[in-house]
Amino acid sequence: MVKIKNTFYVTTPLYYVNDKPHIGSAYTTIAADVLARFHRLKGEKVFFLTGTDEHGEKIAKAAAEKGKQPKEFLDELLPFFTDCWKKLNISHDYFIRTTDLMHEKAVIKFFKKIYDNGDIYLGEYEGHYCVPCESYYLESQLKGKNCPTCGKETQLMRENSYFFRLSKYQQALLGYIESNDFILPETRKNEIVNFIRQGLQDLSISRTSIKWGIPVPLNKNHVIYVWFDALLNYITAIGYGSDSKKFKSIWPADVHLMGKEIVRFHAVIWPAMLLSAGLELPKKVFGHGWLTVEGEKMSKSKGNVIDPIEVSEKYSVDAFRYFILREISFGSDGDYSEKALVQRINSELADGLGNLLNRTVVMIEKYFDGKIPKAVNISKEEKELRDLTLKKAVEAGKQIDLMEFHKALYSVWEIINASNKYINDMKPWELAKENQKEKLGNVLYTLAESLRITSILLLPFMPETAEKIQKQLGLEEQKFDDALKWNLIKEGTQTGKAEILFKKIEEKEEK
Image 1 (tube, rainbow, N blue to C red):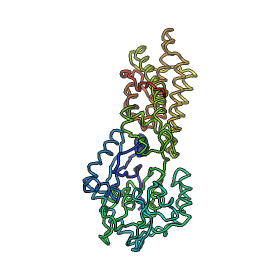
Image 2: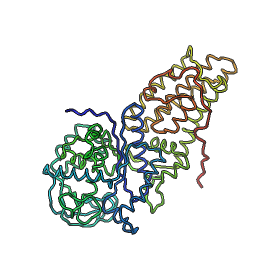
Image 3: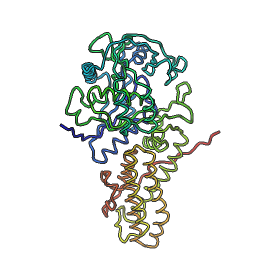
Image 4: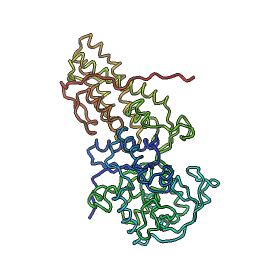
């Protein structure tokens, strides 16, 4: 029977709980939230998954240093993530923990399945192990004795291990990757293809030196490798091993979002695991770039790790969400700068969007008793703004679908800039003085419609701001299709009270 998928399924990676969320994890999660909100806006059924990775040596060591049991240690730290996502207005549908009993049972079921398929065998492994990255590396991959990813010193380890026949799926993976838009952006795809062509080696998927993990069902002296366990969250959270009907209605994932450093796990190991189990592969794996801070790599020693909550409390959640996706091309490396954030708040959010809304609502209140006027005999200028707005709305929708978030926001600001030019060119305050009521009504109705469409396009990025715009315009809930139509505001709609969206921030001069 052919499965009919009726859900848009988006995921973040699982985050390690032994540290607070930082700007990098917020970046991924906000991007996933934008996609989730956009597809809900289009009337689709959405499943948005995030969660925490809670097994492995790194967790066990951190707990022992605090004199706590791993689960106790994790339970105390978990609110850092759940509270952060709540404060950043993240609309996830499910938060999974790899210590959830449901997940652990499903992992064991999956392990047994691919063992029965002949893809797991017992052997001995020797390699250079990096505890922070939870990864083994060949000597040729090291930088001296150090991990090629995080730079920390590795440990030479030898132990009995169960292996997954990753090499068996080399050609199948190459075929899938090269014939589908599976890995984005293109640079990540090229990196993965080159990596696979060098030859895949079977993967060690159990540990005897670690006790904090899911026991291997065949041998309780082994625990399942943390990455093998964690990757399975994408299917265990939606019913694999517990609710087959739910699982079939949601899987495969439409997009897995992550930082570029873990694309290899998601684009090589994960699809090979799924091929072994006879399951469909995800549609897309998207690895975004790394963020620097004021041009420097983030590190605790430099004291430049950015707390997204602190920034949001200082400048507002929506300003932070807007900036992080407007400033940086999603997929490329980018830089976070507080100065650039303040400049965008002042020029784009306060002067651009906020001033436009405020002037429009105030004039409707002043000249039409707060009731949106009727548009009749519209002029060339009104038609030009209408046509540009509708054109940019279509473009923004396509750009969000392609995860070109900075381009989508640029398209929205083209509407805002054109609307500001229009209001300055038409000078409605002078039309009021000259008692040109009909022309004045046309101008204010056109501005209201432009702002209505702008609010819809901004909703995935800045949900609170979009809601405030719609409230001030007296509008009910909007759908994405409403952004592709004109003349939807009814004559006589009562506007709300004009309120400032964003206050300008005084920029401090550098000494």
